[in-house]
Length: 263
Ligand SMILES: [Zn+2]
Image (cartoon, rainbow, N blue to C red; front, top):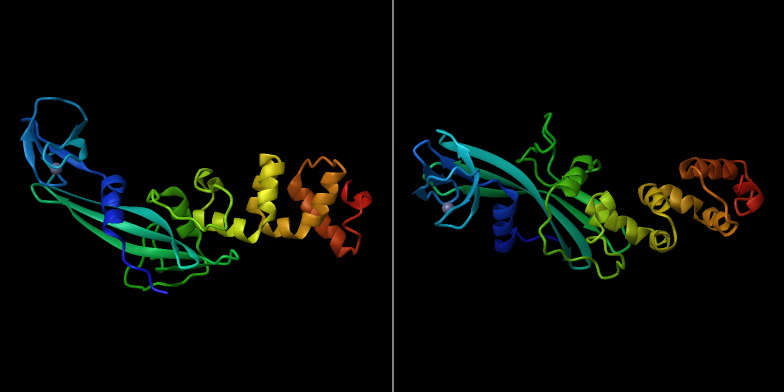
């Protein structure tokens, strides 16, 4: 399935909200808006102002410089057919004094989450660099097994506010800020682990967070967890307890028996 390029309203939002906008100010009091190129005079000394021509909010730079370039990432979370998609873009800004700023938007990654929670990531190859947001822009979008950088970008960079979430998901993931993990990972976890919804309603935040971040243990120890909970067992270290349950299973002990699972 092919996705359409970034829409006009998404691009306008990204330019307005995700990229820095400056007014170059000279000692004489002459300001230049780097967004539209308009110049005007003022004697105020504030470090923020609004361009009287294009209305953009600007950070004032007292400088003789003539050119700035910058880049920033942003995310778009939508539905494509029955799939949840999370797309990531980089916006490049090129600002020259007296000229209209130029913006260029490039897609770097797509997450596809199926209704059963299965998740794939298609993205550009990373270039060898110290910076996390450097990509080989000619490399083409391919399935990537390691999505560490993408999930970092998805978690920490702005999201286009008009999001659309799969209707089968009953948890307000947006309102809960995706529980501090990458949006695609969060949605995929909730779809593939129905236990999380139960935990969220009936358990402590710590327990919920532990199982959200350790899905394998959640699946593996769930039955035992329910039995232990029914016997009012107090979990001091859930991670350690899960390891203990795995050990019991390896030793072929009955992991539904409170005698074993509530040490
Ligand atoms: Zn302007």
